Image 1 (tube, rainbow, N blue to C red):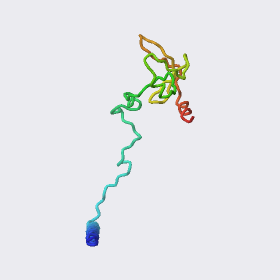
Image 2 (cartoon, rainbow, N blue to C red):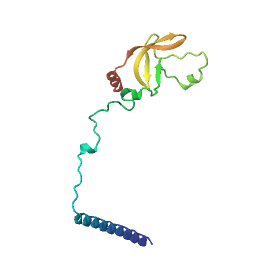
Image 3 (cartoon, rainbow, N blue to C red):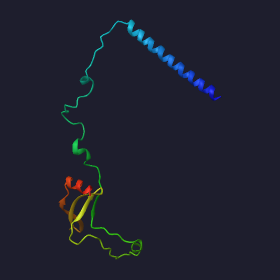
Image 4 (cartoon, rainbow, N blue to C red):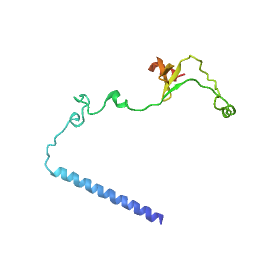
Length: 147
């Protein structure tokens, strides 16, 4: 039964190829028998849009304006520590956890987990804030990545 299906499949392919060859031969014969008509030729410059010239007025936001409303996560890190699960489970209201940062030391400002600045804590209208004291340059960010 498998051989019958294989032979039928091959017959279908042979018929399709024969039909394609017949169609191609008919097209070639029609092209030879008809008088040549001058087809307009276009250069690639006429077909494809040129990016050399900028439009007079942009149709939408461009450059940095396109990303201005994208939200990012900004984090200010006071410090870090490692503790055992036993100590973590013993924490209660009023517990003090010692961090590796020193009092008065600048805090790291991270955007989406990447250090972008350092600063000091300030209080404005009973709310905490951070005054940036040092902005990390792109070159410095790259250098820190390779550490």
